[in-house]
Length: 94
Length: 374
Image (spheres, rainbow over the protein chains, first blue to last red):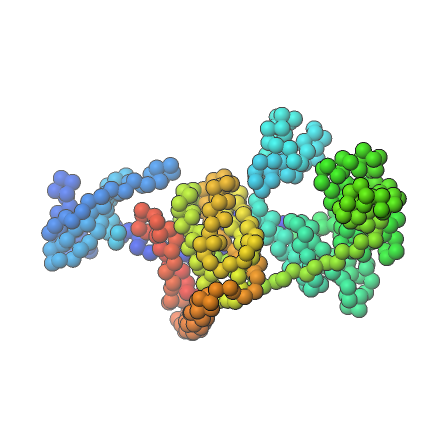
C-alpha cells in the first residue's frame, strides 16, 4: 500500500487572498451611513453605488451576503458586505 | 465485499466469502446484489492504484533499466545482461525482491522465464510473495500443464478451442502448427507458438521522459461541469507552459481527481496524433467528463502529461518554447533569491498568486498566495 493519494500536498500552504475583514457599520434602517475602518476612523458614506446579494453553498453551510459598493467622504471607494446569517459586516474587495 | 471497477459499473475484485456465494468479477452491480443481497460494494480509488503501481515500476527500475508496464499490477523486467551484476535467475529474483521490499505491500508474485508469456504464466503459478523459475529449455514442459485460459484469447476463439476438446496449452501445442493456422489464421499461429513455448517476446523498456503535472485544490468541492472544464483549461495551460515540455508533444494525457468524502476519478487519454495545443488536449477531456463524470464533487484536480512524442509540427510552438525557456530562467533566478531571503530571515517572504476558483462568486475563494518555492 502507498500513502493515500487523497493526502493534500499544498492546500495547507495556501494563504487566503482578499479575506473578509470585520468592520463596524452604522446603519440608518438597512442603509449604511458610516463605516468604522478602525477604532478611531469613522468614515461617512457619501454615496452608495451598487447593492447586490450573493447566496451560495446552500447545500452545506449556507452563505448569504449583502454587498454594498460605496463612496466614502473624501472619495475613497470601498466594498463591504453584511453576513445575513450573523448580521456582522466585513470589508472586502469584490 | 466487492470492489467495483474504475468505471464503477461492474465488479472488479471480490473477497473469498463473496466468491463462495457465487459473485464473480465482471458481473454488473445488480447481478452481484442479486446473488448476494448483503454484499458490501467498495468504490475504486484509481489514483491510489496508479500511484502504487508507479512506485512499483520505479523500484523495478532500480534493478533493471528495461521495465515494461503491461497493465495495472503487471510488469515485465528485462534481465538480459544482468547475470554479471546479480548472478543467475535466483539471484536476479532476490534483487527484485529486495527492491520491492522498499515498496509497501509485499504480495508480489514473481516469475522468471524466457520471454514475456512464459514468465507471466510462471508468476501466475507463484504463491503471493514467492517466485517460480522456468529453466531454459523446459518451457514446453512447463506450459503443457497450464490451462488454455492463460492465452490471450477472445471469448469466441476460446469457445471454439473448447469445442475442439482443448483445455490445456499442452493439448494445443500437440496439434500440428499448420492445422491450427488453417483454423484460426495468424492468431492461431501466435497462440500455438505461445502454447509451445517457442515464441519469445522481448520486454520493451518504457520511454521515460519526466511527467509534467499541474494540480489545483478547490476550497470547496466542485461538481459543476462548466467550472471543471474551465479548471481543465487552466491546468492544461500551466502544464503546457512547463519548460520540461519543451520540444515534446503530448501522447498520453491523464486527468485525476480526488472526490468529496473519499474515492477518486481517473481518465487516461492516448492521443493518436500527439499535440501541444491546449484546445486539442481539452476536447477529449470534455468528452470523458460528459461520458463518465465523477461520482461526486471534486476536491483536488490534476492534469498529467505522462508520455510524449518528440518534436513539434508547428513552427509557432518553437516560439512558444523560447518564451517558456526565458520564463524558466527568470523563475530560477527568483528561486535563488527566495532561498537567500529565507536563509537570512528564516521565513519565506516571497509569494505567488495562484488561481484557485477564479469563477467563484465569493471573492476570497478566487485566488490564494503560496510560497514562491512551492
